[in-house]
Image (cartoon, rainbow, N blue to C red; front, side, top):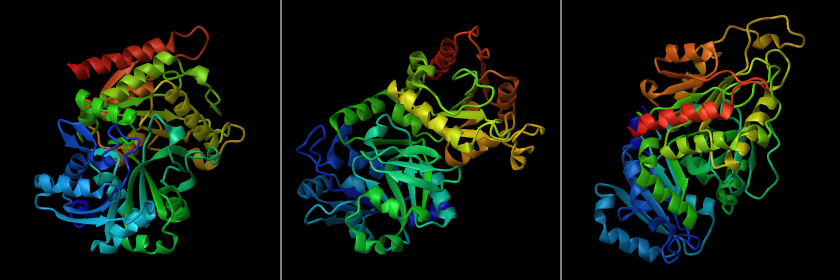
Length: 434
């Protein structure tokens, strides 16, 4: 179903970026060279063609003549493609540029791709989830190392959006997972056309206005902004190291990391916050090396204190958002987070009866991994569970994947938690390198 619908989908590539902050400011962003003489434009076209997409509408602006000349000199890039070049007479903003493409599109669904975002990997799971939602818009979200310089979105487990925050605005205050926008949107063509009266919106304002009709979809494929010299340098390094290729591989392995007693000291009654000092720099550096190797790393944690009435859902989200901020200080991130709020045993003061159930997500059950699999590509046979409990070990056995134990760390006399985790992650990296 998804493949046939993708074949009929058109890509509107917003390629009018000035490139004034790019490595070569004389070229538009879309023509910046990434690897082996290949431009950002060529690499992104290849990524969409792997999905069976062959219809492209390029909205050009600054230095459009250079893009036109490049395409004329390199016809192989669009061989057997339906391509149309659309030129802005003046910079009109994100929504206006998208409307230019939507007006000439013949497809019911369009993919809006920002010209300075590099894509390596399959979008089929994300696209299918958006189609199944029936909503007008879908936006990919993912972690990055510059959240303070990004548009952010807060959303719940179902992808329902709670709040948008444009970069530079006050911090998000609602509960939910908070991640940056990835620069890739799915849209119903008619929904875009209905926005014409507000065509000066940027992408954050567009999505904020359509909050009830927009799905947030976490992604762990390679999606990276290359719009500044430092970020383009990182992209080039990711290609040279194999990071981009590994992250874009649908058969890649993943790491499923326990939280309490493994990543940080256990808090028996649940956490409401995570302090920067609780995350050892060695832990962040080890996770950063995993990120740089292109291996997705997911946090998978039982949080029974929610069912027991000791903490709220909002406390879990707050703690995880603060954890993300603490890791980012040292250049690390988690690709996604899954948690189980249930607990079967009754008799706790203030417990929530609706959460006192036998579920399929509480470790060692595999429901949290199934939820991550719904969003992300990975091979369980090539994956690892790292944890400190019998439940973590049993989870690995239930998944038929590898288990790396660490000694439980929940008190002042506990073994060095950062050293254990660093050793476990380094061991995985050595296996990948071999």
